[in-house]
Image (cartoon, rainbow, N blue to C red; front, side, top):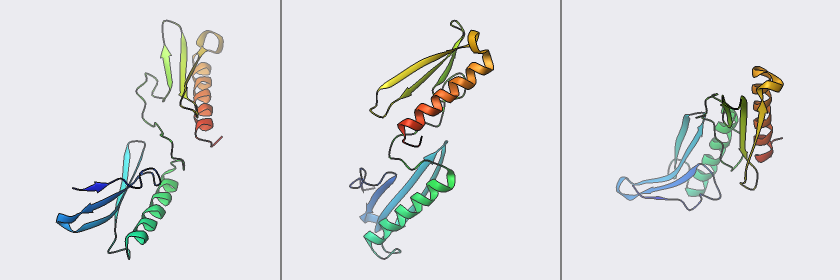
Length: 144
């Protein structure tokens, strides 16, 4: 299958498909969020040409993002946690009796802090750690 990524930087989640062997030409949209894929192909022929198909693909991508609640950003969003708390960027450390919070800022630099369980109690520390992570992620995505 021949694909070109000529618009990768301009249109996130949209790829150009030109497959001569199947006479298939159009735009393929794939929106991923919380482990689910939402995808659709926009044929040049069925949409009245290459540019019309691209406009239809962009409109579908934007409405799909809105429908599933994915923020409108070109930045990478992590929605699946591999931490021991089940929350992205929040990890429990039994030895130090705290929750570690990590994030990446707008410039791509990593940041981290910890929240003491001794000081805030287990539930209070976890809530505070989640709040810090949520605030830092909103700042990075400019949705604060």
